[in-house]
Amino acid sequence: MDKLKISRKAWTVAAVCVFLVAAISIGLVYHAKTQQENELETELLDLQQQLSLFQPEEMAAQLEQLENQLAEIESKVGGNLVGSTNAIDSAEELYALAGSYEVDVIDIASQGLADRTLLEVPLIALPLDVKVEGPLFYVVALISALSSEIPTCVVESVQLTVPQDLTWQLQWPNASVKLTIYSYRGE
Image 1 (cartoon, rainbow, N blue to C red):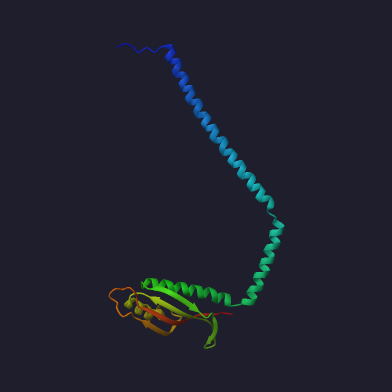
Image 2 (cartoon, helix red, strand yellow; image 1 turned 120 degrees about the vertical axis):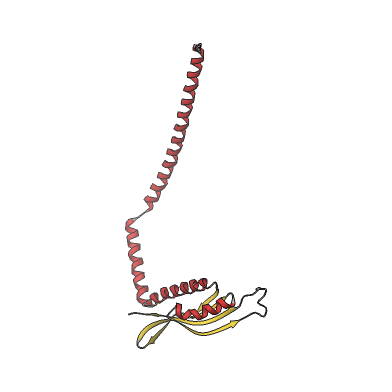
């Protein structure tokens, strides 16, 4: 077999092409690096400007003022703050229970927290008016389960409304439930 001979001119063209590809690649990398450096410098300048606005002494004084305000509010509110968090937990528990029975909670209303005493134990009472809606069997099951699933719940009254025609299910049965959820006030 004859060896394939490549002329000197072809070698020169090939070398120039390889050099151009390498030069263009290096140029693109350098351009991307320069652009990224410019973006980082701009971001650094923005952060330095924001940092120059930060006044640690002023922030410490503001923190102290806010802590004093919080202490003052806590002294005025007293145990009601704990009662409020218990009320939120109770409402969440009620929504979760209704969801597990495939019943929708349409509305929850309350007159607010009230202090009660039972056998000389201080309690916080959360009276609720709850309206639920769903399939009749599930609504009844939910109402029956309220006291057992939420042990501190007392169901005071139930008004059940069943539509005339349940076959089309255009409107689900609903119930208005008056209940009170108790929690320990603690002192």
